[in-house]
Image (cartoon, rainbow, N blue to C red):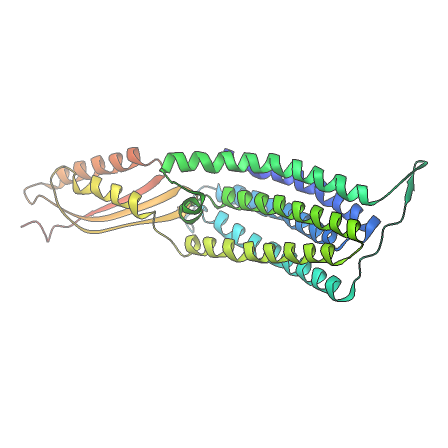
Length: 317
């Protein structure tokens, strides 16, 4: 949890500063891609706020009305990030880029004076975007280290596998967001440069449109990944098999009638099982066997926070 929080805070600080600088660049030059990047950074900043709320809310203790705690709050707030922020920012960016392509709203930047110094505002855009790339590289590095650590712990072989299997949607959101931010800043920088070099506004406008499409694409992908967790997805097949084998190999276990797992928060797993024990065991011995199984499951996978094993007496013959 601390790792996820530090990733989000790093991204929040970077994106807040970058959003202001990008907007200044847009005001000076009227660049469509700079406006798209402004929308992008504003949405990124809002994202971090939502994710921090999710982390804080998700850490609340269990209550009578929420007996398994509030862990799914992170899934909910991450879903809001994708739908409300990335979707809106992506749509606005794409719409502005499309209009710029159609009507050529980009204006040539005029020399600007500040504190007695005259300069070309286009260099403000260059400086802001290069700075954004540096800031986002730092935030991406933090998120990359966090997701790589998870991959090593779980034995995942690729980022695609991690994307499909992780329950840490906070780190997942930050990683993907920072990657898209790096790509967006690079595309905007390239588009602005080509427009200045050729005098054709189409490159800057097309960059804005591409950035918007990327944002909407990410919104859909992130919403889909959060949906699986909000609906109560089980742990990955390999991990569930390992947990099931621990129960199967338990002392005096004759059969597993039912076995289920589900995420009820980030890295918080609930395991339930209906187990048929040796019919010669008395109630006290069965309780002891259940306690042993619970301890073994938790020791094998630290993500297992709740275990409920129901003895099946009808299959004990």
